[in-house]
Length: 532
Image (cartoon, rainbow, N blue to C red; front, side, top):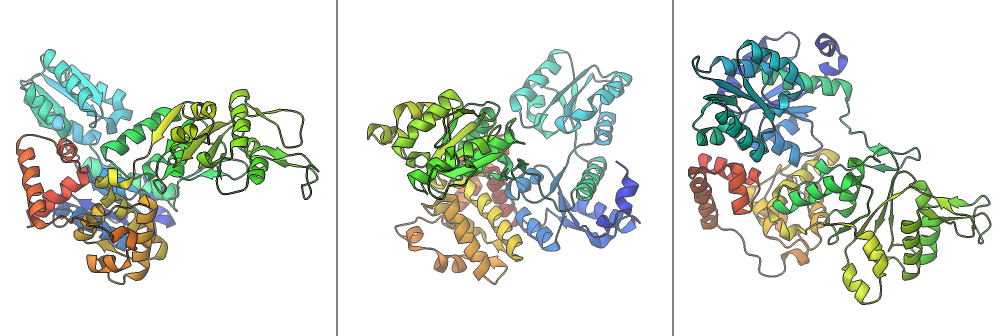
């Protein structure tokens, strides 16, 4: 990477970057540095003190600034990236310089070990040379998110006589449990500079910020990837793990879930995780068209088969998806007579066009989805048992919003960002609105939530959306019934419980899991208590 070329580029004279500093001390250090540089116009960089306001409000300021990229320290960076997948977020992670500085702070007479964070895994070979020159005999590499691996490495270090261990905050508790001295590895100037140049390079290479979708020669694309699916609740974490596991196979996947939960979105994400990602992704709704039209769409036809048919015939979707993926949406609504033809394709791996006599081999991975209970449909005689077994080789159920209420706030913020960007508006939610959303039933799930938020973006003129703005715009199906709202006493109890669990030594991830809320909600409530 040639940094001089990046700075001279005309693109960088127009780009805007926001930096959310984790503390006031960092904010006070970054500002003078930017004022003194001759390579970047300070007006192009917005520095925000993340300790003086809720993180989401700082993100809103960055969005209003028109940022092409946003830089933040972990874990805030990961939370922002999860809620705003369309925004380029670059985490400030420890650099080699930060790691070497931490090693210099270690006691001289102690046997030293180092746990290399995953962000430095590409420099592993170079680091080993440094460790050998400093007589560091123990080292390992592990992701901060994998507690079991970290604990195993820390135990191994203790077993080899290590007395002091360099690593991120993720090893602090494990090191204390083994009576080891923990030498903190915090991201410093090296990490910030690294993130800054990654942001510059990304904008330089991809100025529009658009992800390259999986595409075929025919132009059929799968736009969504797994990070576009918002949700860190336990049930959604399981869904995403299954998607990653299933994606590497060619077996048939059956995605079930209520209307509006995002079944096609997940299907596209699975395709984009598979080895077929550069091949066609073709989708059809099996319940939206007539039986005869569905048959010709799926299998194609030969020339002159029926009145109005093309003279040279037409390829069906199985042929169009050859080498890639065919997504059969609402497969439970497929006419019974066509189910037998679909079963034969799954068994024989070839199709026959309507009016044709020869078989055409196809290599197609089938993903199917339905909001119906197919087992009950089998019992009722509306769906073939043998086809059900063929489709449900790898099942995934997407839970409705009412089963993952802790994700609603993050989904709402992401949708608000999306529609604000589309309509060139700037809004934020009051906390009371997000709490209210979490109490609603959402029978239409994410699709219904999306419709409500788009309506709010178009109608509400104030930058901050309040409960008074929301309630008149909701359909009766959402507000009917006795909805129990969270009052201040319950919120205070939640604050107190979070503090108690924290005093007991539990991590933010453990607190979130125990309370059934997201980690971002834990951070928000802790910050709210500080401000109060």
